[in-house]
Image (cartoon, rainbow, N blue to C red; front, top):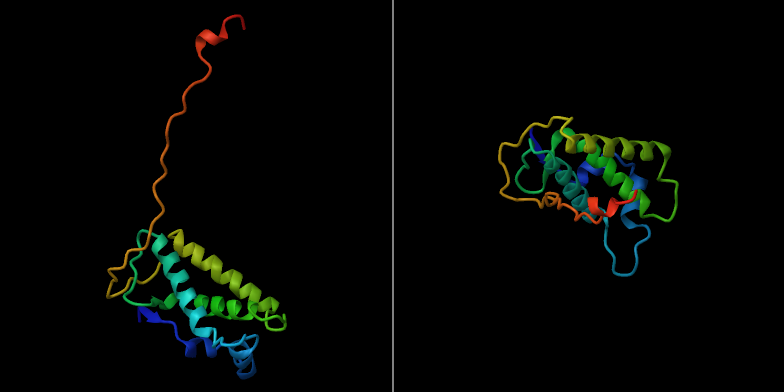
Length: 150
């Protein structure tokens, strides 16, 4: 496997039944729906952004992520789900640590220090890159003739 979709079923393998129910239905306002699909989409875009930051990486087609980053992506989704709830029981130290480790791994991907298997089918999608820095010289306000008498 190379690049795979991140699905709700992947995330639910890391949550107990009561946790999954609480995270998907608790703290919903009138008219709100299960937040899990939206959070999964956000994390997919985040992971793909980290991957694209390294010039050596190519993005897989569609909404896929490298299978090497599946665990990190699931940990990010679990953390984001837990932080939306008004209670802290689901946001344990272990989950905070897992989220920190996931973010560290993604940062390593962006810095090109963690190698990824490249996708078989590359996307034509182009992610926006920050503009190159533009350096302009400053005008000198203090000249040699201003130094007379010093």
